[in-house]
Every structure is written in C-alpha cells, then in structure tokens.
Image 1: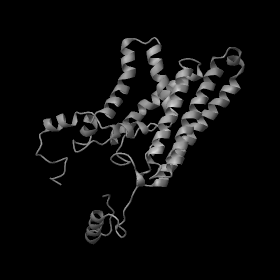
Image 2: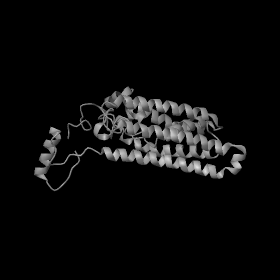
Image 3: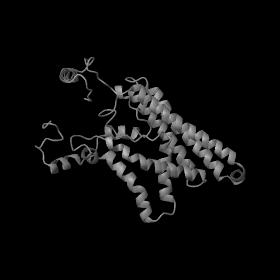
Image 4: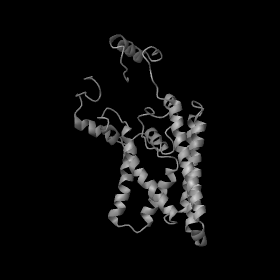
Length: 272
C-alpha cells in the first residue's frame, strides 16, 4: 500500500502539481467529448476502445438531445441582454468543464495525483440539467432559438458519431446500435425542438395550436426517454466486468489474488 502512486512520498506535492498541469492528449479529449453523445460510443465496458477504461473517463452523458440544447444555451448567452456578471456566471461552468477536459490538472487532483481519472464528472450533471431546462423553456416560449445553428449542430453531431463508430467498428460490432441510438437522439430531438419552436412562435398557430405544441412536446419527451433507457440498457447489457473467486482464470494476477482471498476469507466478497 505504501508503494501505491497515491501514497508514494518520493515526489513532492509541488512537483506532482506542476507535472499534472499540462495539456491532455487528444485521445483523452476525444473520449470525453464523445461521452456527450453516449457513454458507450467507444465500446461497452467489456470491450472499451477508448483511453483508460469505461468507468474512469468523463461521465457527462445527459442524453444525446443535450448537445443541441448546449449550443442554444451558448447562443442565448451571447445574444440576449444579460449583464456582464450574469454572462460570466452562465459561461463559467462551461469554461471549467472545458478546462477539466483539455488539462490533466483537475483529473489528477481528484485522483490524488496518481494518474488522470474523470470519475468526478457526474458533478457536472446538475448544470447540464439547468441548461436543458432553460433551453426547453425558451423553445416552448418561442424565443432564444436559432434554427440555422440547430441544424448545423445536428449535421456536425452526425459526422462526429459516424467517425467514432467507424473507428471502433472492427473491434466492436455493437457500436452500430450505439451510434444509431445516439444519432437518433440528436436528430429526433433537434428536429422536434425546431418544430416546437415554430409552433410556439407562429402568429395564429400560437393561439390555436396548443394541441399541436402539446403533441410535439410529448414526442420530444418520448425521444428523450427512449434515448436514456436505450443507453442504460446498452450499459447493463455490456455489464461491468466481474471476476468470481472460482472462475478467475483469464487474468493471472487477479486470479492469484482471488485464490488468496478465497483461502483466507471464503465467506466475503471483495472488489479488486
């Protein structure tokens, strides 16, 4: 235990801080950004094709529908009449998240400078919820929505998802299902947002189209729920890699540790 990276005293704290304050590799940045579309766009947990492994990369998935929402949130921040302080408050969380992705300092800090690990990424989800809710409110009110930006984001998202699926397809055939789910969430959510905006901002339709707006909102909710449940099903289908005491044969070191645990304390289970 004393020789573990977290407790090793050979390197001073200042040296660890300075060595971790550097730009992240492109592979890290790519894996983090792809998590916006799906948690498994680089493979499931038992066949992960990204950096580090499935459970330690940035966990920031809030549904594929979130990506066009984020673009509209940034658009509103720069185009609406906010005070300078309010604009800084709105952009500061985004800047902090970008810094976490492109620099190793915070991922290393939260892992006691052992190595960069992004398990803290879930703390961003409350902010994502605020972005999502505000964007939906603006669309339902018929304001704060740029149609051209929306379709530009949809096109770019599909290109990114397609390139990610192509990169790992040879090693993971199930990526077609994952990429289809992600692309469907982005496209379906983005188009329904556009239709909801048109229904809410139209002249006579704004007075007489309440039923249409409700229908579109229900369809959008269905796309959102389907995307979330589908993502969860994929994660559960892949499963988290578990090794029992009796069948730990594929990984020699883990197998030896499991045998030792079985001999010394056969009635308990341990995570290794």
